[in-house]
Length: 441
Image 1 (cartoon, one colour):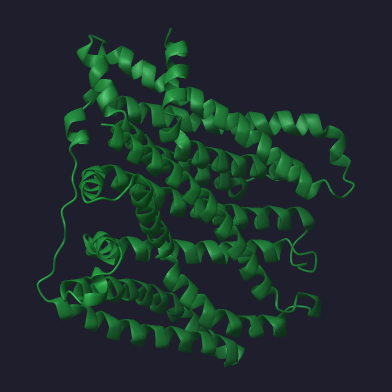
Image 2 (cartoon, rainbow, N blue to C red):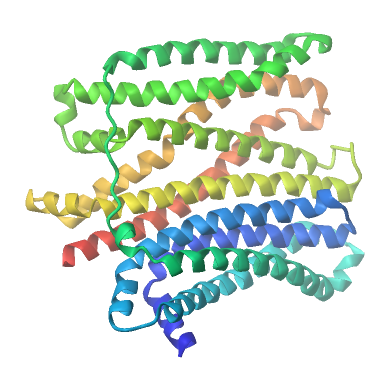
């Protein structure tokens, strides 16, 4: 009975599980690829085990965050079950069975996709290990399954604790408080700080490129500090400026849908500035991991043997993908929660004459802006620093790797575009469903 009811509920609530499925499948795919490399290369040691364990820890945190989101979405349904007389223990078992069923499907999909990617990438050469393809698949699947069990046990234990408390009323009536500021002009000091720190960042990069090797250690030691401060100051200045611009009530802001979008972006501008700064840094670290990993996989890069290069390169690319999954998953969850919280605003806009399609377009614009906003400072930093660093790398690397940084930056940009399209499509589908659901009430 539990299995049939769980399957039915999972099919009915599949829209709510889209982000869960996407995050679980991608991260389990990375774990499967890393396990295949470990088995083929006959690698061992803590540095080899640390990558799957790190991904598992990140996955536990991310899945816990998504589980909380799903619990909020199903609050009314759970309340109905309790009112109909279902015991809390049975409700807990039902929901856990549902989550484990979907998680197991993600494991099968992730392990299969991961092994297929590994086979396409590494079996293009005639390797003797191809004869043991079945053995490799079974062993790597077993390792991935053990980590999957660890993830599900920890997440189920945490979810069970939340379900036993089951404070549904508080989950259903959460609200965000708008943030204000006394001194509207305070954004100017953040603008000055951003300009100074960004100039310092460019100066450090120029020092790394043009100074003799003896003096490079000095700009390298402060470049990270100037980067972090400039990112934080940029978003404090940008959101402070938008808030001040909205408060000044210019005529241009009342045209089309600008007022609604500006009010939505700046309603919690202090938190938004901090969140965008954190995700911008996450994006920059992801780009560094991608470039480092792809350099390691180049045949001309002969600092290590083939097995170690494959492991180190794949590890860096895996870290890049993990950062991208965290970036897009958490931002997507925030947007979906906001769409649900703004259901009353949608009803007001319907009363003002807007159709559901117009509301959907307005919500999609808002989603697109918020997914792109952390990329602004990352794009600005890369545009100024990448050409300088590319010239330095051309002097160090072989001629066959000339302009490799520019090519890898293009590849990383293509990865971001793919992730952006996928997650934007998921959010649009979920937001459209929520808008139509609120319209039918």
